[in-house]
Amino acid sequence: MLPIRRLTQPSDTEIDRLLAVLIDCVEGGASVSFMHPLSPAKARAFWQQVAQDVARGARALLVAEDERGLVGTVQLVLDQPENQPHRADLAKMLVHRRARGRGVGAALLAAAEQLGRECGRTLLVLDTASAEAERLYARGGWQRCGTVPGYALLPQGGLCATTFFYRELR
Image (cartoon, rainbow, N blue to C red; front, side, top):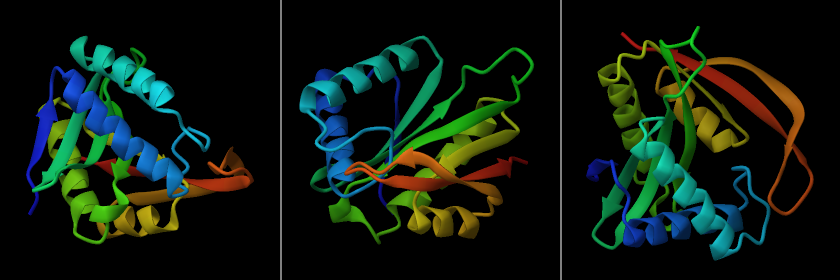
């Protein structure tokens, strides 16, 4: 199993590695809020904002690494409305294409669930536009809520459906 660790103060070097994973995922067609081509400057700005959110406790950031470096990441959005302190959003589950099929996603998912428990959360929610990710979440015990057609754009253009899931933490 690949090591998973929590970043509490992402360094500039770690931000560079995170932006490389994000750019690879967008180039590979992942619908993760960005259009292709994703510039390094735009990706860096995104990760710098995430780092600020991490520093103020609004997000938790996990990364997976192999012998060649950072290969995956996932976030828990902890900053929720005051009537939802029991939940977090699982966001930006990203696995570099060179590391797919090696259990990175499953390891990140399990670590995010454990971190959610440690943060006192009893409910996690997420959305995905990936059939491959849907299978991962279903295998992990997540409950499918439904699919909204035409919810987002794919990185190269064209509408795609998005499926919503939740997981009760015990």
